[in-house]
Amino acid sequence: MGDLLRQVSDSERLFSAWNEVRDNDPEDGVKSDQVRDFERGALRSLTELSEQLLSGEYAPSPVTAIEFPKPSGGTRLLAVPAVRDRVVERAVLEVVETYLDPVLSPWGLRLPVRAGRQ
Image (cartoon, rainbow, N blue to C red):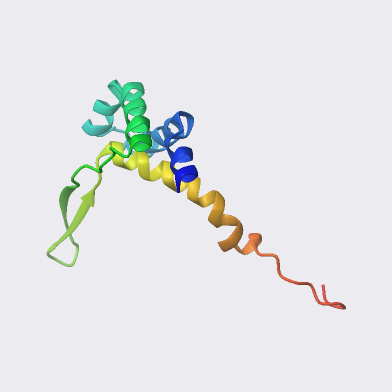
């Protein structure tokens, strides 16, 4: 687990993850207040995240609950993680998918070829 955590906490990986979170945020072309706030101190926040991950001090923030009306009536509850937690989630995904893609992807499977069949 130590090597995976070091990969997740790598400053370049966290920066890449932050870029993904930032680029995926705009709804109707407008960034959310939370992303704009994180963006103002992004380098400091990413450095702190890296240090917290490596020291074991990182703890996710509470999620924000948002209710959306359903077309059929009623509401749907959506739990939205804090920006810093989305950055960590994205960094974890980037690390883990490098290990899982070769195993789980159809093109990553190495099936035996039988003689006479192509």
